[in-house]
Length: 284
Image (cartoon, rainbow, N blue to C red; front, side, top):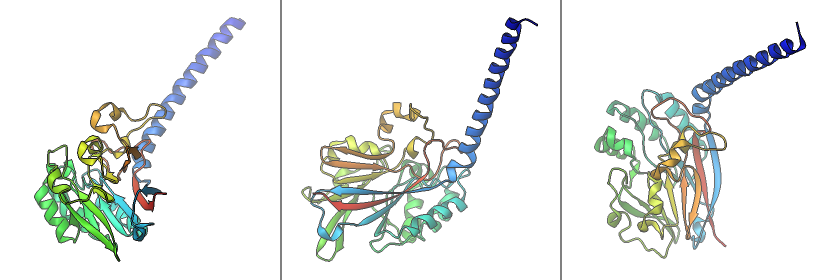
């Protein structure tokens, strides 16, 4: 056998080895995305600096739970795990930012029963997401309220700590045209700090939110599938411009949780499910 033929065989073996390695890597990645990452919950912690935050709220901790999506592909056992992990963070307040169930009303009561186990000194506050309107807004609101969870769609209130006050507002789902800004921010003092719950992060681009100190949103699942270097394919869609983490613009801030559940396919890759713990701090 000539040296040239030996080299040809070696090249062929090398190419075949690469192909096999590619198949193995793809299979491993799929298995990870299917069996590991969707249930590898990450409790993240971040300080959020807010101008003119009252002294009594310096260090105030909000745990955000979003996009639980109890459904055929997200079991009630996983919802229960999320609740247990979230409760262990022992925040001052819980913020639930929508999409509790997917597709069927039969998922509402079991899901909310688990969410109703959350408790914090300043309460549990919630807004609905687009999937909650698909499943059934009225039964979702009723279940949440019966579980002593405060639904704050298109409403606002005051959280008090001694003589200090923090404005808390919620807006209905923008995608379903349920946002009523007159009600959501009616009576809110724009010169004082305000926390806004909105399932849709897209509201960060609306003029109504330019004086809001911090918006807490979900909806994106962090992309659910996100690749190294190129990120998540969903970013080409305008409403998914803000995918995960903290954004700042003209004094306003937005935090987008990666959420904990899934829709469409039971996969997560490059977007670990998240329970976010946000500590408010007085800006210098």
